[in-house]
Image 1: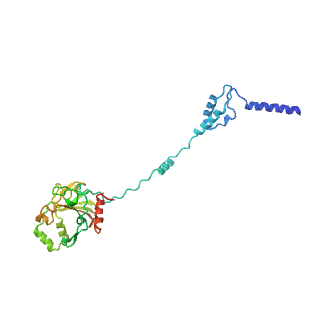
Image 2: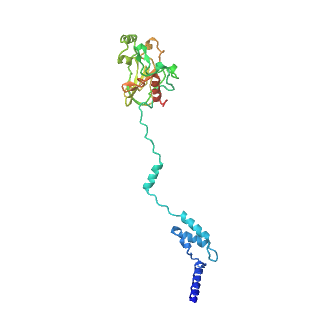
Image 3: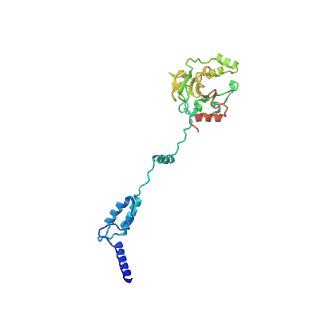
Length: 287
């Protein structure tokens, strides 16, 4: 019995020595075999390169093998749908463009002019001499508009459109016409139209029309049906339709400009300052 125990202990000792001892063949031991996945070959080559001359491997190659395994772990493929979804989440959705406003995009019809602050030149101001009539547009006089306004000053189309009226055969009013206006107490659309003198009207679409009144002349090539671009010369200031045209020529030269909205006019029913602001907005000079 005692002999059997001694033999068993000796055999166990031999097994332990074989399991933990060195192997000159360089084959990986049980601890090296724990490396798994695509890094197995890389781990084995690094371990072999770092082996001691007597065939004993150090712990350093095992740590490197574990690091390589972590860094070379294959990533899960991303589907095209997932990629598009991620991109959509990252992109900022652009806001809808602001709807086009037909009362924007105008230019001042006289280059270099400013918008007068004189109350009598603004839409809605009273015209006492016309039986308390109402001014329906904006006046450009030299002394109140920051630039020269003379017979030779060019009047520009405030916005692209089609000419729907050009008074090419206009005849100036006479003293008899003025007496007729007085006798009629300045009433009626026909008289109001005569008081505007020589005119050009441009249709900009969507119910918006610009009117240019009291002209001394109309530019060559401008006639009903003519398409004009914004800023194109269409005429020249004057005093047609006013008493000064025969009584004191050259003393009331100006441009009367209107933006018509349907059957009304821009600024109708507003205060003078509010009407002025509407024109500033039309010319892009105010928010």
